[in-house]
Amino acid sequence: MPFLEWQDKYNVGVAAIDEQHQAIFAMINNLYESLNKGVYNSGNVGSVLIPIAECIKYHFQTEEKLMMEINFPEYHCHKTLHERLTEPLMAFIIKLKKNEKVDINEFLGFIKEWFLAHISAEDIKIARAMIPAQKSPARVK
Image (tube, rainbow, N blue to C red):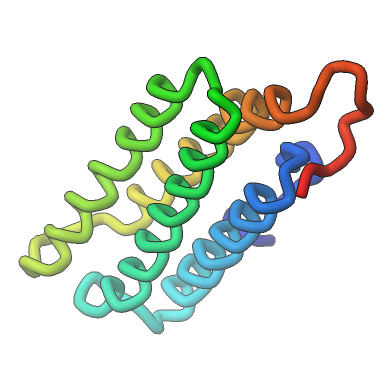
């Protein structure tokens, strides 16, 4: 069973966002599986965690650009939520680079909880703002 299992309920209806969410889930699942197989440890996990962090940052930039394009009223609040994940993620990577002791499983748990809650409660608001009320909730490209 994957660490982060993608379910249809996580689709927000905006193709770019949904595809990026699924890619992030896949990257985190690959990391989790590799950790369990002993491929990565605190000494070398940075080589895979840094690209995941970069992907997450790119995803946040995508969402923020979409929000600006539609004049999303909760833009600043949503951006702040992104920063609340980015800051501890970057702090964790800095610890890895300094060879400080880290608990990757604890951190993966934090990312999992954050993403699942954020997608369900916050990202769906972007999709709703992009899709006029009179239209069916078809996927937005």
